[in-house]
Image (tube, rainbow, N blue to C red; front, side, top):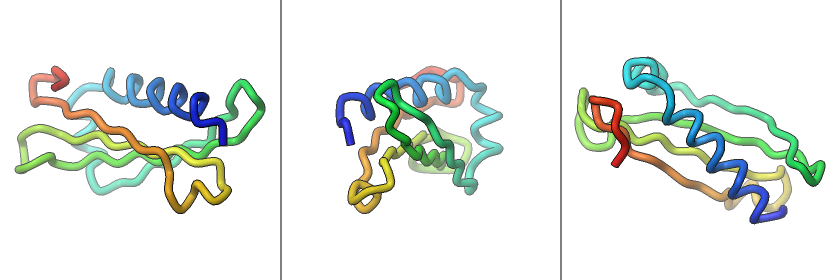
Length: 91
């Protein structure tokens, strides 16, 4: 897996998720979303997104995403996360 490419894709996907409204993200709690993306190199990547309460219900949200190429990296995917406050701002 091209680690630099995967990191760029993951950052882009997290930015798109962070642009969503807080209530929309709350509605996706307890749902794992999977997306397949083809990188500029032609490599296929799978991205998994999860949203959950960071500490308590109706508080901050943790938006977590992981990416792998289906190889050994599937066991140890690259991950990143963001925290969104109820007013929609990011920490």
